[in-house]
Amino acid sequence: MKLFQVRQRSTGAVLWVGRATDGDNALDAMAREAGYRDAAHLPAHVRNGGFRTAPLGL
Image (cartoon, rainbow, N blue to C red; front, top):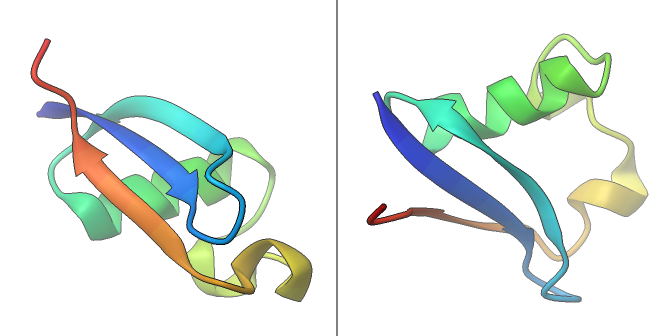
C-alpha cells in the first residue's frame, strides 16, 4: 500500500491522507472514514469540482 493525499480540486483543501492501493481506493477510504459507504455517496458539495488524488513519496 502507498500513502495517498486527496485534495478537493476546486479549493485545493486537503481532505484526507492515508494508505490505499490506488487513487480510487484512496477516495473510497476517505469516504468510509467520514462515515459514507464509498466516494459515490459523498455529499454533492464535497464532490463538486472533483478530487485530485496523488501518492506521496514518503
